[in-house]
Amino acid sequence: MPFTAPVETYSGRIVEVKIGVEPNVVTLGGENTFPFYGFEGDVPNKPVIAMEVYDNNPVDWVDAVKAPFADVLGDPAAWAVKCVKDYGAEMICLQLASTDPNGDNKSGDEAADTVKKVLDAVAVPLMVYGTDNAEKDSEVLPKVAAAAEGRNIALGPATEDNYKTVAAAAMGFNHNVVALSPCDVNLAKQLNILLTQLGLPHERVIIDPSTGALGYGLDYTYTIIERLKLAALQQGDEMTKMPIVANLGVEVWKTKEAKTGDTAEWGDQLTRAVSWEIMTAVSLATAGANLLVMRHPQAVAGVKKALGAFFK
Image 1 (spheres, rainbow, N blue to C red):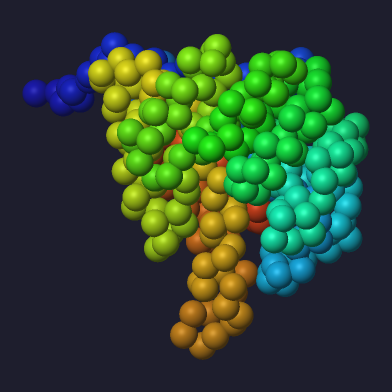
Image 2: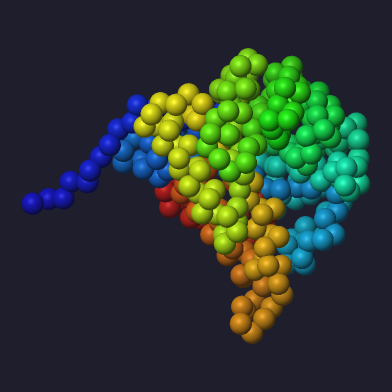
């Protein structure tokens, strides 16, 4: 007797969020089934990988991850160009680390100037991420939104403490919002409710449920993403049907497994760290993340190869 695989259908569908402008647009979401379950439904868009670019020189990075960017560290526009031209980045995530009030504390005007330079340097879609300091991001992100007018970027993070300011800036200049909440389904839903009540369309919201690296909270993130997808697809929950981003590069490269040098017990640091990032990214894509923010070019290439087995 031939085997017939059990197939389920679902009433819900993840909305599509488009970032960028033609002809350089990435589309997140759109699926009406679980990750890689193309035999059960429609998965029109593969997970997108965004490569990190920092607006300062990350002197605390280990040599293994600084080496691919050694000639551009401290120049975010040149860094973005290198990611696109040398490493095939389909999207850039500009991390505004220099605006951290506990660090360089650069102003919103300085951040906006940096965003303009990056947008002038590359045509691929852009995500701009603040420091998760609600007060400072409330100052910085509206100026970033104005500077990026016409480019349809993803802007974040919007949190419970600053969502009104970030959402207003995004709606005023036609951008998308990345909604960051602690690792909890109900908190993610509540923030989405608040954003949509302001008039922000579902198609302009990306969920950031907080990300843990392999061995450092990955299991929690995985479960939260799964539950968000279950609620959206099986229960038709309007407040969980937005695409999901996993901001994983920053989390992977602060683990001891990535930062510790070569050892007899653990072997080569670069191989270990890149593998750590690949395993984290593939795991979160399997859970349902639609956008993966990554750091090392070798890890990006590895994940692209893995995704290529499913998306031709």
